[in-house]
Image (cartoon, rainbow, N blue to C red; front, side, top):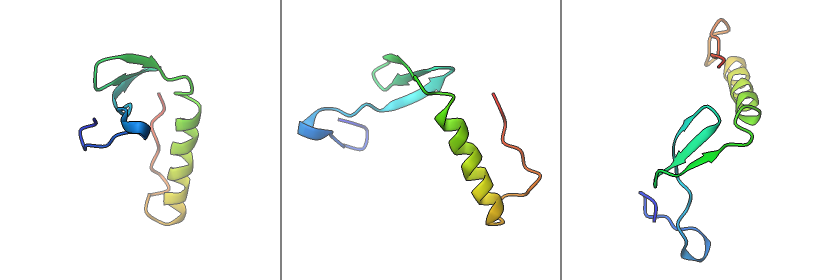
Amino acid sequence: MTANGSLGPEGEDLLVVRRGEGPYVEDTDGRRYIAGLSGCIPRRLVDLIARRLRQAGLLAASTTVPRR
């Protein structure tokens, strides 16, 4: 059971990622996994969100999103 009491299909525990470092993520049980697309999709998603926030006037045009 997760910290908020949620269970997955058929009552199994959900994978809850506690932290990430480089290409790895760690679950709440301390197991490490390789995040296969760790640099591809998240970077594009961050850029898209920043662009939409700028268009809505909620983020200054001069604000930069840090790169790794």
